[in-house]
Image 1 (cartoon, rainbow, N blue to C red):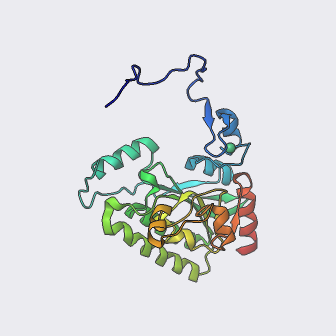
Image 2 (image 1 turned 135 degrees about the horizontal axis):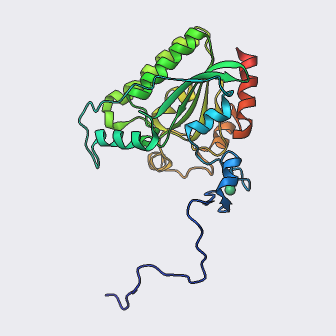
Image 3 (image 1 turned 135 degrees about the vertical axis):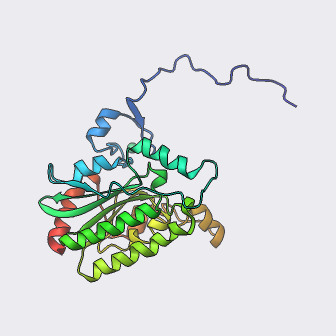
Length: 278
Ligand SMILES: [Zn+2]
């Protein structure tokens, strides 16, 4: 039995100053309040603790590709709701919503363009499109991007950001692991250079396929990278997990990735790697 009741739903603090909406962000890592225009100027990296916020594909394009050198590909490929999948929402509605939100047809966009005058094919996954999930369209676009990179003999750079395979497409989403890995093996066999860049978060089917198949694997600082989530692993092995488990720094120490690269030095790093390796 309750002895007392709260009249107001929310406690109010009369001293608390309201901050204008949209001008400030709180860093989830160090809790500092950051002025958003300042944050954007620094490529959405916290100047207190170097936390890398998630950014949109367009910012990566502006950051990495030389101005006026690039062109987008494969924009007309659209997902089909093979299974008439309906959970909380109908999959067909989810696709429409995500398309309206991001302006893209699926969770990846591909460009050809130059990085410091080296021609590359650049793919960028978008976590805002149904969690960057890999369905038939992502698989098809990655495969076509590899074919294109092979034809023009350019390296393939892929910025990964994904919650895993798109379960709304059932087994067809899982086929994309095999499809992209096979295409990648062919590309690699013909001497192609593939550099995935793992950003926060890169998990599930993407980690289990092209995310971990790079000639050189780069990651942004502090990114969550793994296959299953920590809770599932803990339940399976019945042990506590070490601190920092599944973050870039931990994976670097264990040899799963090759370099952790800050966003502001990513272009230089890629340019150097390409000139050495291709
Ligand atoms: Zn911070």
